[in-house]
Image 1 (cartoon, rainbow, N blue to C red):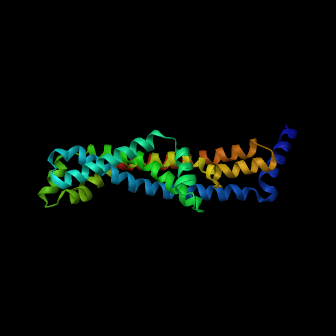
Image 2: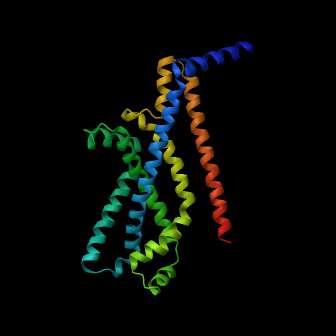
Image 3: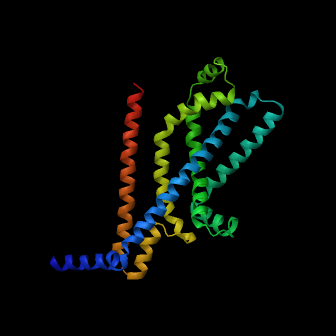
Length: 241
């Protein structure tokens, strides 16, 4: 038992203490959280816009005429293509296309990764948010019109806030999924948490300790976020009564 403990201690010192390699994990964690945070904000912005376009077309295309109908038809078509392409291709492939093709001349890998993950997340947020909008009773639209709001004002002040409340737990779960998806950022030379663990493994030729440490950090983050989502869901249920 003591020999096993001594070996574990030596492995810990080798992988994390020597050369201050624990700082690699800390810096990688900061990079992961930075990319995930700004990507989820971008994803929400894109997702809300696409959801409003898709739901508006589904609910009102038979009422539209002339230029407004043509514009909405084009926007709806673009939104459907975006959803099909993004949801139908792996995120790692999208990331590499963004870095090596679309932004091949850029030296800001973090910005490119944030864009790639944000655009990917936006497709899933769009469907989450669209389901939230479609779940709102149509009487809410009539209530908005009775207050003198036009369609855009009704969506912005009445429908979107209610839909956001309904889908907020699902959006938080999307952030958790996005946090884990950023583990492929190392494909474009970004030293995120996963890449930091792999660098330690390459330097010490010891795979167990650094990779288990990375897994435990991700697990702790996900457990903390899941706990927060659970509290949020309970609070939302309480506010409905």
